[in-house]
Image (cartoon, rainbow, N blue to C red; front, side):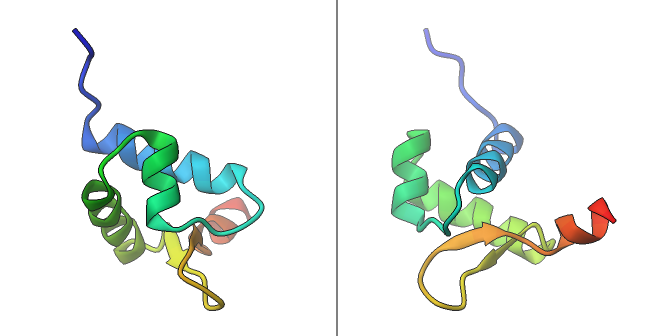
Length: 74
């Protein structure tokens, strides 16, 4: 039996995936790479965006890590 991943684990997986890429990723790409339904990815991205952890790419439909990480790192 496969262990179910909780929302926090999925959110962290999304953050690590976005951090590992050099370009913004769209919801379909994130869902495909993490084997998670697109609806779950979208819901998690909305929650992360509300907290400044991810942001939409102004040049396209992708997502990238939010600027909050720059503040945390300084």
